[in-house]
Length: 202
Image (cartoon, rainbow, N blue to C red; front, side, top):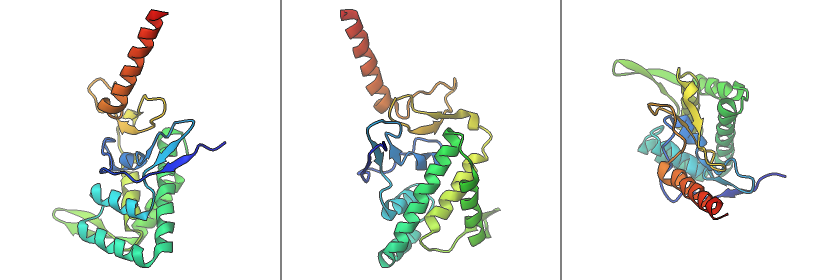
């Protein structure tokens, strides 16, 4: 039986604990490993835009432009939202479940085909049309950027049984256990302490 999905927009900024934009994208789903509920924060196209703006994938002017397009073309915006969620799940599967990278590569190829490389100071950057697909194209670039890193052996996942949030473990000893020490870390330390007390009483 499928695990129920609770759609709930975040009332705070999107978490940026992953160490890479594409990992923070995966963390727009919470309680991913739970048997009884999964929390979806990327609930609609508006939240996709908010994520892209907060993570620096689009600027404020582009954010206003794509929101205007979404209000005029709601069906197309819904389709774009669905594509972003599909890309997120394909990337998670590739990184953490041994899934194929083909869907991620295809999204990247589509993005590159729609853009142009332009001069930016001493380097180059991708320039894309400001349309409803802009956030997804920027996300696709970030996804492949993650896959091309040379430290993917540091990919890790929160040790909480339900959480499922992911990150690059850049700790000196490579022993980071929790997505957020003050959240999942504290909750599990309290749980473990309570279990020890109960065992002692027994």
